[in-house]
Structures are given as C-alpha cells and as structure tokens.
Image: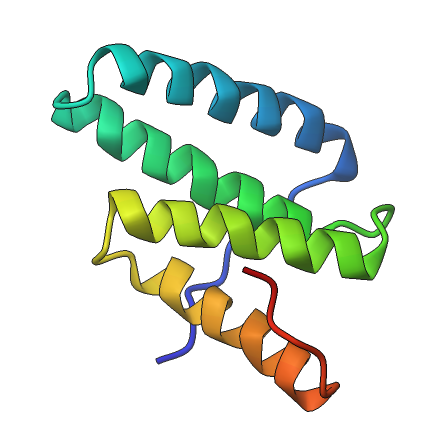
Length: 104
C-alpha cells in the first residue's frame, strides 16, 4: 500500500520538528505509559522523518539515514502506522537498489 500524500514540509520547518521530537521524547521518559503522549511522540517522529526525507538542503545520504531512524521510532511507538512502514520500506529499497547496506 502506498503512503498517503503528505503536505510538503519546508526545510525551514526541520529544526522546529526535531526540537519537538526531543522535547516529547524527554517527556515520554517521565511518563512512559501516557497513551496520548506516546501517540503525539509517534506523530512527531513521523512528521520529522517525512520532512527529513523530503529535504532539499540536506545531503541525500544523511537525510535518508535520519528519516529511516525517525520512521523506525514511529513504528516502535505506533506499530500500526502504515505510512511510516511504507516510507521505511521505500528508503530500505533505495539502499538495496544502490547495493548499499541498510543503516541500523
């Protein structure tokens, strides 16, 4: 299943998105069972991963590696997130097509 179309983020949004993820991840360490916080953190990781993947200013190797990290974290928090799973698979297929190891 193809991922849903997302609004294209701007490169200017990326620092704010990463800061939001860091803030929510810290809160999650204090409240690890807060379901709403878990979902907000998953959503923030997804949006940051998508913004990183779509970034035009970030080096391609770096942006795909970082996006993959955010999509994996999204799936840890929200295993049912089909968009994160689709984008994760897409990035992994790019690495495979280039005969490159998939980052851990």
